[in-house]
Image 1 (cartoon, rainbow, N blue to C red):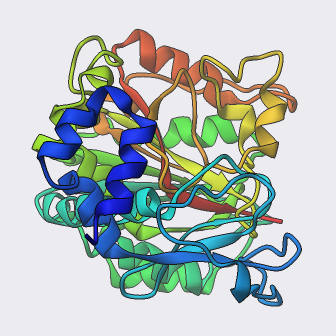
Image 2: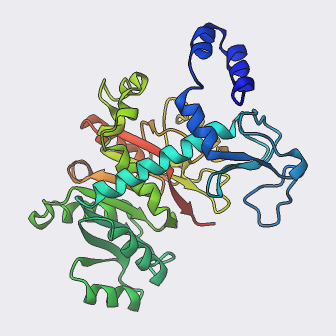
Image 3: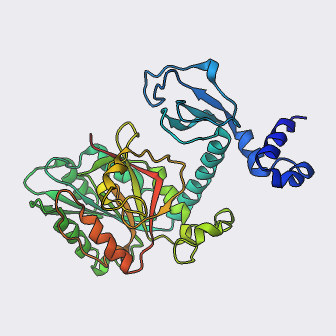
Length: 361
């Protein structure tokens, strides 16, 4: 039969479940992922599939159920021509059936996030400096992101000594855009000014703060933000995972985060680029620089962390305004102490690989 080889594979891999497999059809999740998966597409000689000049090795393509080991480069093609798990030769074992299953699950979460965001109000708290001022491209990206929310305000710290006609024009056209002149290199103080402004009564009705640091980078994936908000929406497929519920003090953590950080990546999406701000059970003060060698797959599960930022982070307004930033030495990050304050105040901090932010070169 069509599913005979698959059943044999499952029986060999999981002998304790022979009776279940024989007496019932292929598990619904696997069946769904196979129907959504096309194949593994192999590249030649470890060519990076993100490279426009990468060469295909069509003779080495593999089926959706075959394990792709380290040493193989390529991507999974899913229904609709979607490319996922685009990897070089350095990666963990993967199967395209699982990757496509994750991809379409992520897409459903993004859809839930967009629905939720329509009832949410936010403030965009943006920090710039003399080298990274806001231009028309970034203004357009902020506007595009803001359109997904019920209401939006924009608080922008900028260098008052540098004329910015685009920013001034936007401020004149939109009363929700507040420009905060600043001419110091003390970025911690710049963030504290934004925090002080958000204490004002006129911002009390805001639900969330999206903090963007243009000194780190200048582009982000809007669907990644939608995915993060989608995680807060109760859903049966998330609730059933008891292991996850243990992470945030026995709460359903995907549904209860109040700080969510970005996956800060280099332009070629092969390396993490905000290791100074990131800490978890593995990346600590003595080895955090190793994180720069890590490539977080956008389909990886979100994780609870001790500290993170990533160029763009989402905070509940009450959390964001509960702490202050302090200057940090160049080899460290002012977010470390700020995040420790948030955790002491009860914050539940989430790192979402799907919420990507592109760093400057």
